[in-house]
Image 1: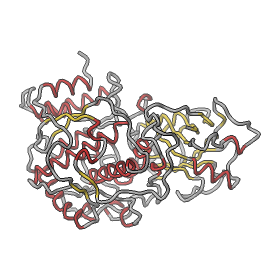
Image 2 (image 1 turned 120 degrees about the vertical axis):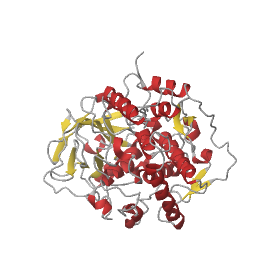
Image 3 (image 1 turned 180 degrees about the vertical axis):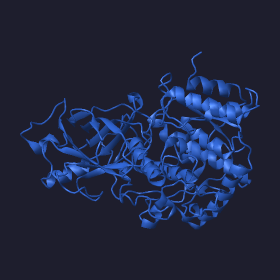
Length: 497
């Protein structure tokens, strides 16, 4: 039998006594998660530090409540690709952790089912439907939820809730990692973060303003590589990962779960998803009949369905406050099919793949292969064909073999020779981060894609007369001088959808 992820999960769980679990079935009051800066959040951070210490030093290795078991459920330190290397690393690690344990040991079987399970960050060619971007948010909601349950069990404290790190609260001080994580003697401290992070500086100090909430411009959950879920995945999700940690820490998928700040970051990502759902007309897609394996608060195997994570109310928790954007885009179409790709028009495209082989790379776009306004009418070439449609700059097929902390500011039609400004410039459309891109070299079916909604920038540049008929895209690397990754972008498209 060919070993695939589906085989491993099915075999592992079928050999276990898997508890039936129904979200919200327990007779419990709704719990509240608080900001890490609030009095309640700080009280819970004291408990969190105690729990992390217990999970690392008191719970036996191989127990699902051990720190590394939870970390490895996201990804085991090692490769993300190719899949054969992923499975080889997993087998080696399981054999190390469960030396002397029989093949049917319940914890061993649960590790086989749970480890390397993070959705949207892998590819199994034998089971191409396993990792999907649309599952990024519900899988992580469960991941944080059951991690929180484990902590309550470890502490024997049903009042504990995981705080969230609201780095985009509007207070600049919140862009610094909470002080509880910067004390070297604390279980919450990790020395391998970016040096400025543990020094208490704002995490985006190398590129101030690059972390944003532009995902709230989206009115659909997912639509190919665009929509709220994939854009939130890129920023602030991936942007914060890279700003906090290097290639042995938060900066790479396989090592990110080892840092205690990971969980506060994902708690905030979960809060932002629920915040989006609370806006008028924002609904999630109809979830397929898909289940995920986890360990409950007692470390026992359970299987949960995607639909059970649709909203926080189903899981009997809430947040003390939610994000409310100043401008809420209206839903363009009543009851849209959120999973079907709407007809997208390629307006402009780069003629060939682009290598980011210098600190500043400029690429000229040319008309795409679909209905366009005449080239003699430059203001019409990029004009929206309908008020309801949006424009996106797609950087697709991003491949890099290197592990890097570099990011790239992306500009639309920045004048040649102009100094590369920061995110406040009207030509700036976003920042490309390479979180989840390392290890994708030669694996184009699992390459990294990034989308930027450029509708507002296009309108503003057109109004100011600063957008040419065939604009350029400029990418400016931000990172240490010695950190020059080998990056290729398979295609650059400006689409209307």
